[in-house]
Picture (spheres, rainbow, N blue to C red):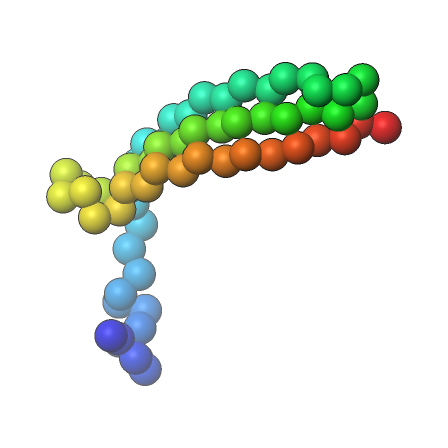
Length: 62
């Protein structure tokens, strides 16, 4: 853990990769459901900063 004056040195910019896909389907005329998958990798090959996300959502359109 870094505290005090050394805290600024702990920050690091990382280039990375973010990819994803999803589908949305109408349930009712104004209501739809969606499912998404996202993968992000901001590590330098060690896998420390990669993430897999699955998102589920419902949308209502006025």
